[in-house]
Amino acid sequence: MSVRALQGNRRWLALGGCLLWLAFTLFPLYWVAITSFKTPLAVVGGPTYLPFVDFEPTLTAWNELLSGERGAFYNTFIASLIVSLSAAVLATFIGAMAAYALVRFTFRFRLLSALIFVVVAFGGFLLGRNVMGFGQGISLIYSFIAALALAVISSRFRLPGPELGNNDIVFWFVSQRMFPPIVAAFALYLMYTEVGKLGFKLVDSYIGLTFAYIAFSLPIVVWLMRDFFEALPIEVEEAAMVDNVPTWRIFFGIVLPMSKPGLIATFMITLAFVWNEFLFALFLTSSKWQTLPILVAGQNSQRGDEWWSISAAALVAIIPMMVMAGILSRLMRSGLLLGAIK
Image (cartoon, rainbow, N blue to C red; front, side, top):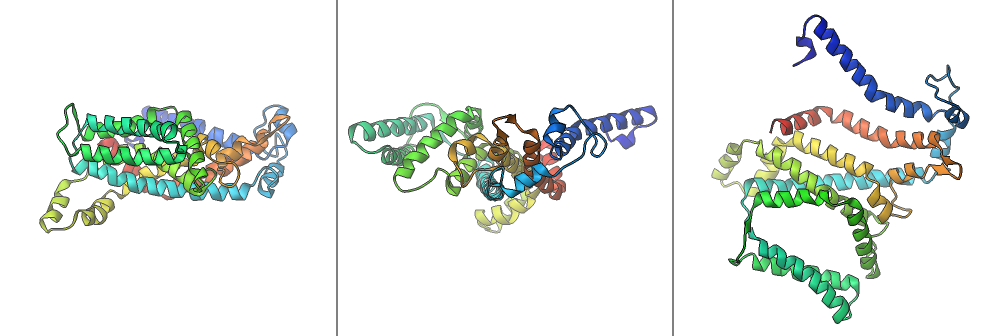
């Protein structure tokens, strides 16, 4: 029910509650903003709320940040922008294709095929590493290829055991987000290090960090886009099939334009996850491709946390997401409402 539909005191109470909630949500942003313009003495001397009334604002924290005294600000900002946009776009695109396939096509495979993949992957790695004397990187690559090939081949036979379907695949995607991130970050660092010994640098590189964020984001993209695609009318696609339109043209020419609000909403959620992600950037970067969360966390000294510098860096990290959300707000609202209705 809209506030405009209420009458009398109920309308004023609802309006007052909305204003209180607005003040509650905006006050942290206001506090960060004014803290970035305070001197160290103004920060440690007690709470002050109004510039030019409680304290005299200064640009010291901003000058230190933008001049590079607090870290390579421009390089970090550009790295965050490039990696976040690339990972969000690719994850949304790949995840949308996977979600559409899970909605419109039926997949059946045996649990035994998945077990074959796990056993061959781990067993092949140990065999290559400890028996054949291969390096860890070579053993990892060979065992993965062999496990994938055997799993695909075995799925074509009528194997014993339970049969899994689309819902099980979706659950498997979502379950990837249930693992503690530190486990995945540490494992990725070890794998990237071994691959780097083969001549393919992935640690502190654009490709390595982007691939990690794509894998990190795909489960949530598949989960969200699956609901969006299920809400679309299938009659339009069936009419195109009657006219012998190829499946790929149906997807790119009909399905994606119809699901634009959902794609925008999913893209923004993915972008927010990647933009604010800290742990993977901490493990997988060292200098060149460090992101803004690392810069914000590094705004301290031997005297402790310097909140004026942290606030300035935090505002730099917040503003681009607010601008992007404002530009795409209408499509985001439509997409989120579509998902909520589904």
